[in-house]
Image 1 (cartoon, rainbow, N blue to C red):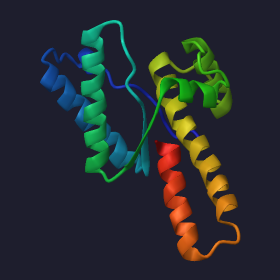
Image 2 (cartoon, rainbow, N blue to C red):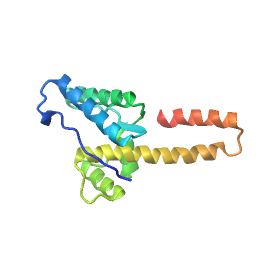
Image 3 (cartoon, one colour):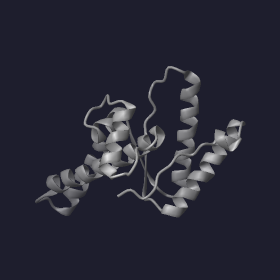
Image 4 (cartoon, helix red, strand yellow):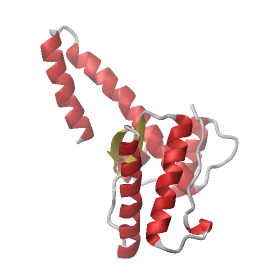
Length: 163
Protein backbone atom coordinates (compact mmCIF):
# COMPACT_ATOMS: atom_id res chain seq x y z
CA UNK A 1 0.00 0.00 0.00
CA UNK A 2 1.38 3.38 -1.01
CA UNK A 3 1.17 5.95 1.80
CA UNK A 4 3.35 8.77 0.48
CA UNK A 5 6.48 9.38 -1.51
CA UNK A 6 8.66 12.21 -2.68
CA UNK A 7 12.19 13.51 -2.92
CA UNK A 8 14.22 15.83 -0.76
CA UNK A 9 15.92 18.56 -2.79
CA UNK A 10 18.56 20.14 -0.57
CA UNK A 11 20.17 22.12 -3.39
CA UNK A 12 16.82 23.65 -4.35
CA UNK A 13 16.45 24.87 -0.79
CA UNK A 14 19.33 27.29 -1.41
CA UNK A 15 21.91 25.37 0.59
CA UNK A 16 25.32 25.49 -1.08
CA UNK A 17 27.46 24.29 1.83
CA UNK A 18 27.54 20.45 1.82
CA UNK A 19 27.25 20.26 5.61
CA UNK A 20 24.10 22.40 5.54
CA UNK A 21 22.66 20.32 2.71
CA UNK A 22 23.28 17.08 4.63
CA UNK A 23 21.78 18.58 7.79
CA UNK A 24 18.72 19.56 5.73
CA UNK A 25 18.40 16.01 4.39
CA UNK A 26 18.78 14.58 7.91
CA UNK A 27 16.14 16.84 9.46
CA UNK A 28 13.79 16.31 6.51
CA UNK A 29 14.10 12.53 6.86
CA UNK A 30 13.42 12.75 10.60
CA UNK A 31 10.25 14.78 9.89
CA UNK A 32 9.01 12.16 7.41
CA UNK A 33 9.84 9.34 9.84
CA UNK A 34 8.08 11.12 12.69
CA UNK A 35 4.99 11.73 10.56
CA UNK A 36 4.64 8.22 9.10
CA UNK A 37 6.32 6.04 11.77
CA UNK A 38 7.91 3.37 9.51
CA UNK A 39 9.47 0.26 11.01
CA UNK A 40 12.16 -0.18 8.39
CA UNK A 41 14.39 1.77 6.03
CA UNK A 42 15.57 0.15 2.82
CA UNK A 43 18.45 1.57 0.80
CA UNK A 44 20.23 0.71 -2.38
CA UNK A 45 23.83 -0.29 -1.76
CA UNK A 46 26.56 1.85 -3.24
CA UNK A 47 27.69 0.99 -6.70
CA UNK A 48 30.76 1.95 -8.66
CA UNK A 49 30.13 5.33 -10.23
CA UNK A 50 31.93 6.91 -13.16
CA UNK A 51 32.12 10.26 -11.41
CA UNK A 52 34.00 9.94 -8.12
CA UNK A 53 32.52 13.18 -6.73
CA UNK A 54 29.00 11.87 -7.33
CA UNK A 55 29.93 8.64 -5.56
CA UNK A 56 31.21 10.60 -2.56
CA UNK A 57 28.04 12.73 -2.39
CA UNK A 58 25.86 9.63 -2.66
CA UNK A 59 27.82 7.97 0.15
CA UNK A 60 27.40 11.03 2.35
CA UNK A 61 23.64 11.13 1.74
CA UNK A 62 23.36 7.39 2.45
CA UNK A 63 25.25 7.90 5.72
CA UNK A 64 22.83 10.66 6.73
CA UNK A 65 19.87 8.39 5.91
CA UNK A 66 21.42 5.60 7.99
CA UNK A 67 21.99 7.98 10.91
CA UNK A 68 18.37 9.18 10.72
CA UNK A 69 17.16 5.57 10.71
CA UNK A 70 19.32 4.79 13.74
CA UNK A 71 18.05 7.91 15.54
CA UNK A 72 14.48 6.67 15.13
CA UNK A 73 15.24 3.00 15.85
CA UNK A 74 14.40 1.75 12.37
CA UNK A 75 15.68 -1.54 11.01
CA UNK A 76 17.97 -0.95 8.04
CA UNK A 77 18.18 -3.22 5.00
CA UNK A 78 20.31 -2.70 1.93
CA UNK A 79 19.86 -4.13 -1.54
CA UNK A 80 21.97 -3.88 -4.66
CA UNK A 81 20.47 -1.97 -7.58
CA UNK A 82 20.29 -5.27 -9.48
CA UNK A 83 18.32 -6.92 -6.65
CA UNK A 84 15.87 -4.00 -6.54
CA UNK A 85 15.30 -4.06 -10.30
CA UNK A 86 14.98 -7.84 -10.39
CA UNK A 87 12.36 -7.88 -7.65
CA UNK A 88 10.29 -5.02 -9.08
CA UNK A 89 10.72 -5.34 -12.85
CA UNK A 90 11.81 -8.97 -13.11
CA UNK A 91 15.04 -8.00 -14.88
CA UNK A 92 18.16 -6.88 -13.00
CA UNK A 93 19.39 -4.58 -15.75
CA UNK A 94 16.14 -2.68 -16.25
CA UNK A 95 16.37 0.98 -17.19
CA UNK A 96 14.92 3.91 -15.23
CA UNK A 97 11.71 4.07 -17.28
CA UNK A 98 11.04 0.36 -16.76
CA UNK A 99 11.43 0.84 -13.01
CA UNK A 100 9.08 3.83 -13.07
CA UNK A 101 6.42 1.91 -15.01
CA UNK A 102 6.72 -1.16 -12.75
CA UNK A 103 6.42 0.93 -9.58
CA UNK A 104 3.42 2.79 -10.99
CA UNK A 105 1.72 -0.50 -11.89
CA UNK A 106 2.57 -2.35 -8.66
CA UNK A 107 1.38 0.50 -6.43
CA UNK A 108 -1.56 1.56 -8.60
CA UNK A 109 -0.31 5.15 -8.86
CA UNK A 110 -2.33 7.55 -10.98
CA UNK A 111 0.75 9.09 -12.54
CA UNK A 112 4.28 8.03 -13.33
CA UNK A 113 6.59 8.77 -10.36
CA UNK A 114 9.79 10.75 -10.93
CA UNK A 115 12.97 8.72 -11.28
CA UNK A 116 14.25 9.42 -7.75
CA UNK A 117 10.85 8.68 -6.23
CA UNK A 118 10.50 5.51 -8.32
CA UNK A 119 13.95 4.33 -7.17
CA UNK A 120 13.02 4.87 -3.51
CA UNK A 121 9.66 3.14 -3.92
CA UNK A 122 11.35 0.26 -5.77
CA UNK A 123 13.75 -0.23 -2.85
CA UNK A 124 10.78 -0.27 -0.46
CA UNK A 125 8.93 -2.78 -2.68
CA UNK A 126 12.06 -4.95 -2.87
CA UNK A 127 12.26 -4.94 0.92
CA UNK A 128 8.59 -5.86 1.29
CA UNK A 129 8.87 -8.66 -1.24
CA UNK A 130 12.08 -9.96 0.35
CA UNK A 131 10.41 -9.95 3.78
CA UNK A 132 7.41 -11.95 2.58
CA UNK A 133 9.63 -14.44 0.82
CA UNK A 134 11.92 -14.75 3.82
CA UNK A 135 8.99 -15.36 6.18
CA UNK A 136 7.71 -18.16 3.95
CA UNK A 137 11.15 -19.76 3.70
CA UNK A 138 11.66 -19.58 7.47
CA UNK A 139 8.24 -21.05 8.17
CA UNK A 140 8.96 -23.93 5.81
CA UNK A 141 12.45 -24.53 7.23
CA UNK A 142 11.17 -24.54 10.80
CA UNK A 143 8.26 -26.94 10.27
CA UNK A 144 8.51 -29.78 12.74
CA UNK A 145 11.54 -28.37 14.57
CA UNK A 146 11.73 -27.68 18.27
CA UNK A 147 11.79 -24.03 19.43
CA UNK A 148 15.56 -23.88 20.05
CA UNK A 149 16.47 -25.41 16.70
CA UNK A 150 13.91 -23.22 14.88
CA UNK A 151 15.43 -20.14 16.51
CA UNK A 152 18.91 -21.09 15.25
CA UNK A 153 17.57 -21.75 11.74
CA UNK A 154 15.84 -18.35 11.68
CA UNK A 155 19.00 -16.55 12.80
CA UNK A 156 21.11 -18.36 10.19
CA UNK A 157 18.66 -17.73 7.33
CA UNK A 158 18.42 -14.04 8.30
CA UNK A 159 22.20 -13.66 7.95
CA UNK A 160 22.14 -15.56 4.64
CA UNK A 161 19.36 -13.46 3.10
CA UNK A 162 20.67 -10.11 4.35
CA UNK A 163 24.27 -11.01 3.50
